[in-house]
Amino acid sequence: MMKKLITNYTLSELKEEFEKLGLEPYRAKQVFRWIYKKFVTDFDRMTDLSKDHRRLLNEKFDFHPLKKLEKVEAPDATKYLFQTYDGHIVETVLIKERDHLTLCVSSQIGCAVGCTFCATALDGLKRNLITAEIIDQYIQVKQDIGEEKIRNVVFMGMGEPLANYENVRKAVEIMISPEGIDLSKRRITISTSGILSQIKRMAQDPVMREVNLAVSLNAVTQKQREKLMPLTKTNTLEELMEVLKNYPLPKYRRITLEYVLIKGVNDTPKHAELLAKLIGKHKKRFKVNLIPFNPDPNLPYERPSLTDIMKFQKVLWKHGISNFVRFSKGVEVFGACGQLRVKRVNISLVKI
Image (cartoon, rainbow, N blue to C red):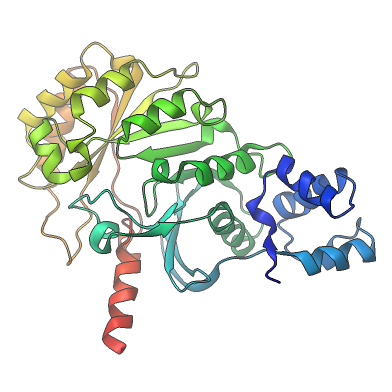
């Protein structure tokens, strides 16, 4: 019989599983603390459990659904490639900020949104990641880096998190649980292409509405956004901005609007003026991350010049809109979403 993945359960779910095995519910809390406080993934090292309990748990549960294939390091980022049980490749990126570490996790294998500037979209959606596959990215990276603390987690890797809502929600619950990883809700960000029904669902969810929301905008007109992001044919820019302007934000929080700057496509001062107009009087509700396109030989776009990037930024400043230029970390390791995976898959295909 196939073993169950223990990291696929929230604490309340694990208590129920343990009760079915005849174990006291508090044992689940003990195991949770071993996994998520000490990052121990070996029942035989969990010394506050009896030998009989350890033997039983070894018979019933496994820890790691992912196998680490590759680790590529750059001065400002480390990219990990993992393989799933069914042979797919998943990317995870550890980003080295000035005073902290941020982990960028994937939520799907591939993506169905179809953004024309994204390497992940090149071969479509394969499947959703289960909760254990999302959590295992964090666990294996943490085991690799040792005592260093990961302060932030961003769901900005491969896939559309809100298209895998339930598994992402469970992963978030484990991450913010005091008995789990115990991250601050302010330190977790869900990045979405703007699926309206799921943003509305998130707004009503007591777990998900407490974390940060980032939305990939990337265009200032409906026509342009449809060209860059086909999903927006049914999730229009006008409706999206209306939903975001009424989204229930925790105190002192803002929604991040992510805007990938692409040379000759959406990077002029006129585009910046239209972006400012979209935000309108809601300046205190939004901040804008300007992300210069990360070049990829498989994609037909280029990065704007630094001069054009600064011109765009100055227009937003003129309108009093908080904004930051976010150059991609780890360009040396194919740092943008999906790039190293595509490179690895292409090499594998050539070998075949």
